Length: 317
Ligand code: HEM
Ligand SMILES: *[C@@H]1O[C@H](CO)[C@@H](O)[C@H](O)[C@H]1NC(C)=O
Ligand SMILES: *[C@@H]1O[C@H](CO)[C@@H](O)[C@H](O)[C@H]1NC(C)=O
Image (cartoon, rainbow, N blue to C red; front, side):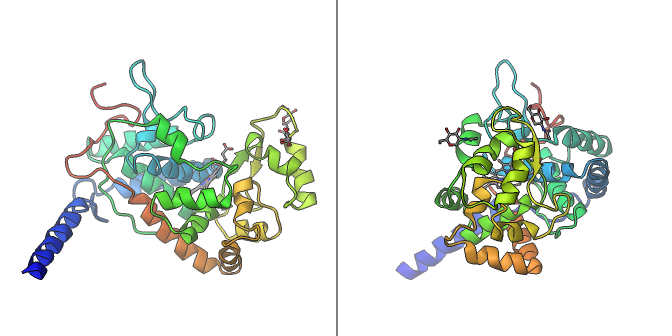
């Protein structure tokens, strides 16, 4: 009797779990908007051809969306007189890029299939296609995310990791979202593309000791000890190519951010960095799986949320 009711509880639970993901599927737009994916890919390729860094920016946009209320395009909502979005949060302001690319893609898919393709899915697909465009791995995305009708400035400030984080902080922030330490290291490997502002690595290049001396000197040339906060540095030596050079740089104490070098600083993640630095195929497969997992963080499905017509605004506002 007891085992029977436990069994039926288990069945109900599995059924509910199945329901929660019932609307996410890899062929979600196959009949409702068959050209959606090729349209997004073409627009991403076009944007990356114009500026390679845009691939990095679109990938980061997806990360900063997913870590705040889940992958629901909350990051895209503009502030209004009566609404505060996430764009002015510390980790986003003056830093997150690519909003115009998403708007361009959205208007293209809206003219193909009005009201069908969510902003959250566009961001997820654009991130994947960006990595592919820069020579990284591909992965199969679950689609059918819907868009939020809210955003959270305070969660963006509290949940996104900062560049001064120590290893234990990085591990716990990712663990809070369900990621293992190894997945956190793999995801950090996306710093193989893109750039950072002087303000985010100044203290590291002037004050830290676990840094290659010649590397620090060369970075000091583009990042003065005062001023030039927005001067940019590449995150690794091959910034427009998605590869495992980021991990080789860490082994040479050439991590740009304090948080980067934390992954190879005598702690528990050194061995993971070793593996990824010598085995690019393992890094590619681990980062692809971790990206799928990140893309599945708390999606809105079914009748939750909405399909925004303008990614910057809640419908009817
Ligand atoms: C592990 C914790 C992480 C920290 C502390 C961190 C921090 C940062 C910082 C400070 C920047 C430079 C921003 C600026 O100076 O304007 C940056 C750039 C970037 N981050 Fe992260 N990040 C982390 C994880 C991730 C993850 C998980 C991803 C993607 C899955 C990611 C993707 C990127 C990319 C692609 C860039 C370059 C963006 C561009 O050039 O526009 N980061 N990150
Ligand atoms: C170096 O560290 C000192 C002491 O914490 C701090 O006051 C100073 O601003 C730091 N220098 C730079 C360039 O960040
Ligand atoms: C960095 O910033 C400083 C101060 O604003 C500026 O003089 C310098 O030209 C910048 N360097 C580079 C390489 O952009």
